[in-house]
Length: 343
Image 1 (cartoon, rainbow, N blue to C red):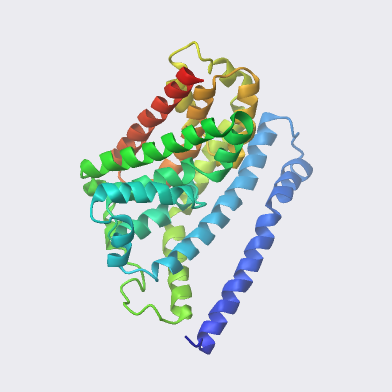
Image 2: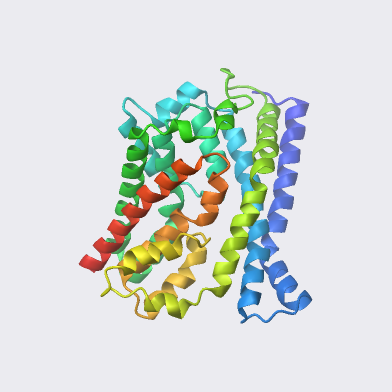
């Protein structure tokens, strides 16, 4: 397909925007340290300093990631008709869609900040609710960072068991949610939202229209959810700065049966991705915490974060959020007890 001048201008504008995005993103960490410690005069080892640095770094990072993910998802949605998407994730049976969605989630670098655009993109193109949740659970929970960490610390058997159990949680939880027929608990505006060019049958449409679809998605979705994002990160920053690691480690021993459910309850309010939780996981293991308990904690942080619930509240009603969290939390606790029993 020969690109017309509007498409060339769209490509140039998108590349320029990406360059600016990357430049800002790469400078976030030194900026957060400079603002927190040099400008505000906070001490790096203080709880307040840690919380402020966390917020100053994470808030723009998540918003930048949200902008990029929404824009890219908006463009990708323009390539698929509803029928094509259903054929990819649903297949002949919905249970097959749960499996495919969970496996697809492993190889996609999505975090909780991308939950809203992914949810809207899937639902509005006809993907069943349960299949959508299988993907949303698998994508943040089972990722390459967590697998590399577990492989390096404990070998391929533990890493493989973690991957298998994480995928099973995504498949089973999505299947259960699908069987409960909870579509009535999705906000009405989600089903009314339509991809700008998703109904176009011709795949050879100008790239400029696809870029416009991504821009409109950013304006619509980010404009709706950014206050929820900041509120969730503020809560996570407070917990990040003021929850002592030593106290958490003391509660995560293998002997107490309640350590696994307690670790899940502690992990849910925290906000972090797999890379951010690695230092905490290593510290907890170094202080004698049980492997299954720590893994349950890690999976709850990256798969069931409270900020994600705050973000998802824009598209889901409270009963569905509670059911989603309850089903996945039970699965995570089963994994924690399994690891504590066999390791």
